[in-house]
Length: 228
Image 1 (cartoon, rainbow, N blue to C red):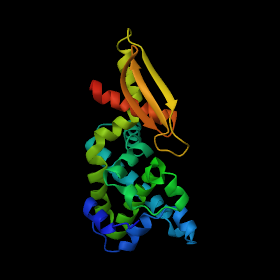
Image 2 (image 1 turned 45 degrees about the horizontal axis):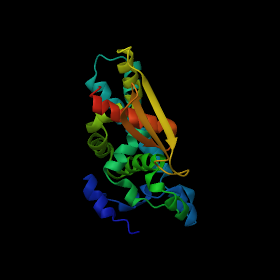
Image 3 (image 1 turned 135 degrees about the horizontal axis):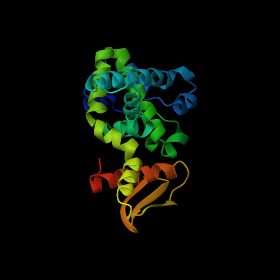
Image 4 (image 1 turned 90 degrees about the vertical axis):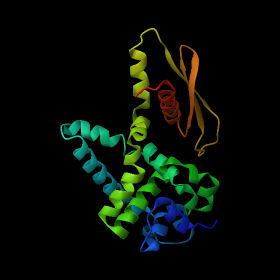
């Protein structure tokens, strides 16, 4: 598979001065191991850096837009943006999975769809942008692909609790999740969940775990019922 990193730069709107940084951000450890590369040549070091830059930019943003909010609530708001499911959505929005270098086994096991691989690679890209263009470039990248979708990202974290509050406000209603296994281990959509209110199917979700499938169903239900 030819990875058109020129196309990726067009999609993201950021052009690298040092394209080797972008390529490294796409190298999963399964590929570097298979190619007999050094482990530090994979994207893990860039992921480590990108994680720190992401947390700083999100913290700065929340500090500025919520001048009267206390530290504990700022921390909660930040956690609703910097977690695997949210970063997976960000990664999918730029088609990141198509550009990854994966080992043959990981590729055959639908590695391009795995939330953990996508979220880690997204952080690695942030790290690469930071090294290539500095903090301002990384901040712009994060604002474009994370912060501009802040409501959607927060919903991904809080979907189940929002549905629960909705049900608690209407004591006559009953909430139930029905989950079943529909795929092989490693499949990004291994589990399917249905969210029912008073035995009526409201939404369905999928995920690599029962919890993730339920959360996906809850997020979809929040959209359908316009719960915020």
